[in-house]
Image 1 (cartoon, rainbow, N blue to C red):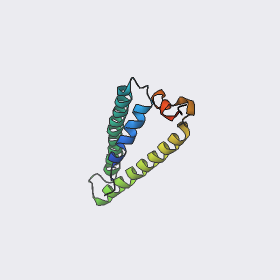
Image 2 (cartoon, one colour; image 1 turned 60 degrees about the horizontal axis):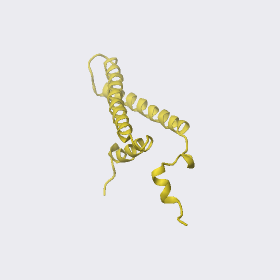
Image 3 (cartoon, rainbow, N blue to C red; image 1 turned 180 degrees about the horizontal axis):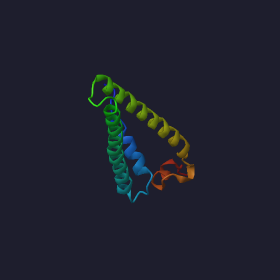
Image 4 (cartoon, one colour; image 1 turned 90 degrees about the horizontal axis):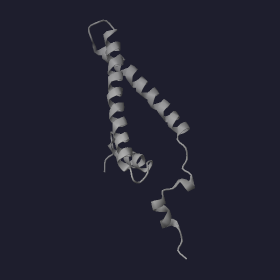
Length: 115
């Protein structure tokens, strides 16, 4: 069994979390919002990092060379790492713990004892 090298191992957990946050009669809304934001985030992230990379490579002497390429990669990797750190801090601060009374009614009967 190999290790996941991309986010494909996270997709089921993310989809489950997105669907679990909406009411049980509207699971499509949670799934649709999850997919939309994931696709937009990928597109915007690639565009932003590509623009930073191109500006860095283009600003180091006009004609791209190996040193400019490595420097551009170095910059966008730091930008990505800082973005991930900011997102982790934001998630830790903004996510609220689940309250026991907020459980879904479809599962609550399974935890009650029959008398």
